[in-house]
Length: 261
Image (cartoon, rainbow, N blue to C red):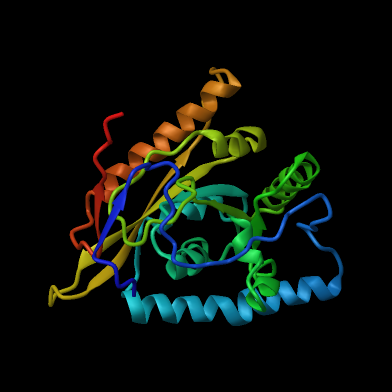
């Protein structure tokens, strides 16, 4: 558990409070997002279904007493691809909980390049569904094609629109509408999940309760730009409402006072 009790911040959009120190490798046009071949399909099945899913289930249940509310909203779309957005507040939990939320549907997660740059584990995370953000136009073309392919295959694509991790933060930080261009382009449903921190009965520890909301659809009467914004606002408002259910503070976040020039 993070030992910090208070964190001071200045910029809700750009401040990063992860304690991991990883030198990210460049994700260029040579990065293979959707590897082909029987062996690659086997490694995906092995690492994702045989190893990671059971570990995520038991770890989240034992460590966090994890509970999901609203999962039934996903059932009508079990054969359809969709995007699901969440708040970014726990390094380990955010890696494992999406697969619990979308189960039995397979999910892929848009991540920072750090997640595929770690020694040893970085070689495994692509098999777990990591889709690292690209560097350069050539890589962006492959990245976008990979997202479209995973959605067309009927998978869930997980996005943390806040981008930066704030450990145990109990509110929703403002985020842009950039990542909502994907569901607009793919013309598919959008869901969101909000991880909240709630007191256990003894009051000394917390449990994580996840609330799922949706589906949300792009309003096709709007322009493409406004569809993105409309989806963003629907997701943001739903997440903010559920974030109010957090009642346990692990780390207090205090905004720094602006210095007078």
